[in-house]
Amino acid sequence: MDELIRPGERIETWLREQRCTSALSALHPPASEEAIQSLQNAIAYPLHPHLVQWLRIHDGAHEHGAPVWPGGYVPYGVEGLKGGPRQTADMLEEFHDQFTEEEIQDMGLAPWADPLWLPIAGTNTGESLVIDHRPGDTYGTILEIDYALDFWGDVRWKNLGEMIRLMAESLKSGVPMPYSRHYSRVPQLDEGPPRHLNWKLEHHDPGAGLVGARYGR
Image 1 (cartoon, one colour):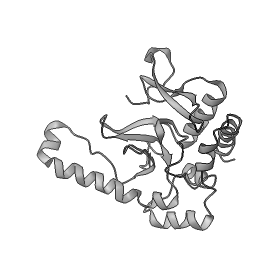
Image 2 (cartoon, helix red, strand yellow):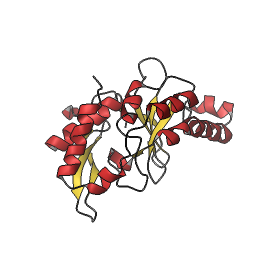
Image 3 (cartoon, rainbow, N blue to C red):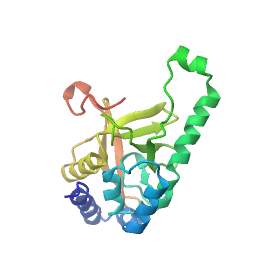
């Protein structure tokens, strides 16, 4: 069974019940199988199955609509996802333009991106969420890139399925959604107009057990 279908439906039900019509209308209809195949043809590695599942639910969202995902992130559709490899290549090029190989070794710098990171969502201020497609323990993890806060691939969630599930659980119960070792996201309704969902960043005690050790800063 697709891991994203049921929690995705719960999120949409909550938005409908709370009259967050702008967020609902911003979500695009499902992508066609032909469109998903065209995306796979444009990407040099197999797409993570959770991303394929998500696209079969929504082909991204309108960039000017009220964002549903935590942090103000708007998910990309098929056409936006096709530009992902170019985006990560540009980040790597910028990194190597700014630092020499000697500086990278002396300072122990890690690159700002990886060719197997695929951006899946962005904000209007330039932050990105990416799916890590590297084989191994990191495969499928959702990472965040934030130039302003020096986040260069901090792990936020184990995979896209976990992110959507935690969103649904948080909306239903009102409990904070795990985000990092020191912060969580708390759902709040903004009356607007239009009425919309915000995910407030809230500090918490890392010893309280809310967030596991796998999460970043």
